[in-house]
Length: 209
Image 1 (cartoon, helix red, strand yellow):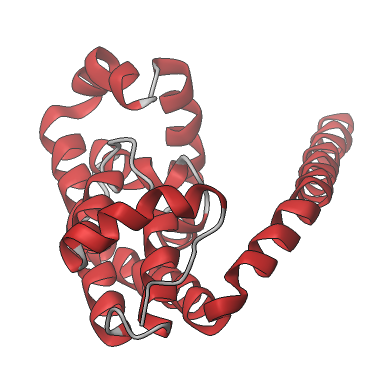
Image 2 (tube, rainbow, N blue to C red):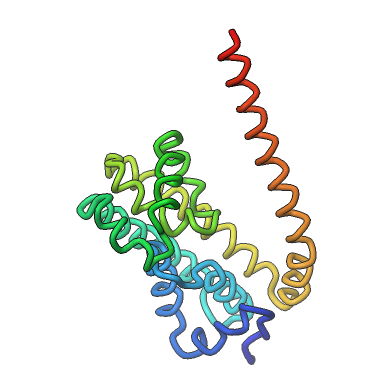
């Protein structure tokens, strides 16, 4: 049985998966999780599609994905914990983490702690940075590890499940996702604006009192 065709950006991963298989899954997810630009999420989806077609084992893809995600974030945590803010400010620009972006992410992380570690994996940018920021903010490692493992399991389970279930329909699904992604981003933007406005109004009323 030949490998299933992969649409869009997923198609660029086909030669890598054909040649490296599970090693590609582990390596690309691992390096993405401490800031190195890498298509970790799309690799996971593509590998799950391959598993659905019988070219990889879905249990192995999920297990490797979770382990690689947890290890990658822990490397990021170690970098942040040992190097601190000075290291981030000096070299952050090379992993798309300039000082202003780091400061905003750190403030958000400090306010929400463990919840951010769990859900950060589902957001581009936060997924690559949450381990580093957890380290620089001195979040206790056992707490970080627990929330990080939970987030990794949920993230890998979701996207591996989507890719595995889609199978031969991945092209249609990918097309539909791209078609409606703009509307989804607009909706999310409106929600964010609404939450910010609500918070601003509460502060104004609080200061007036």
